[in-house]
Image (cartoon, rainbow, N blue to C red; front, side, top):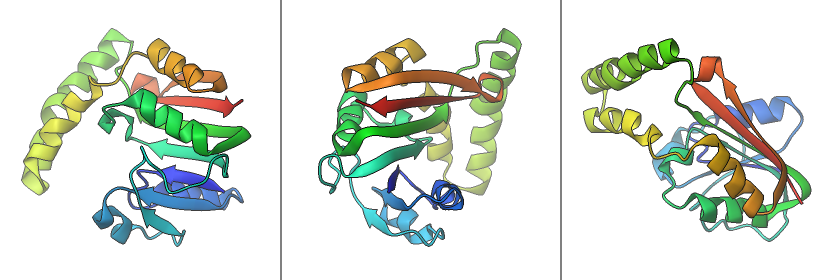
Length: 173
């Protein structure tokens, strides 16, 4: 059993199922859960106070939501609480590229183009918030330290997609 937190429309749940895992879709937004077409069981809940017993799940995934948590140490402690010994967590989010050329291109595209397109097609305020939300994330070393402090081992951080995204993974002690 793997919790997919901030599961949105269930994309990760579909992938988890393909690999023989049993995902549970959890999102704070009822609207997102209503749009979830993964077929996985789903529930509305706050990721900082999960309705799950201690050490009840084999893993946790979370995609593109870390930047929305104001209290990351509390979030990491909560996922540690629900994850069994030896269980794994995988947390994917946007990142600031380290390559100066990629960082410049990303800054222009993500900071200027995406908000304009978003404003034309949807909620402009949400798309203006998106680029700023990345700056809320601590640097990779701090994120890894927070996971370690929460009780995880084998903590790793990988830059993906030329540094546009980052993957944090760890095992529960």
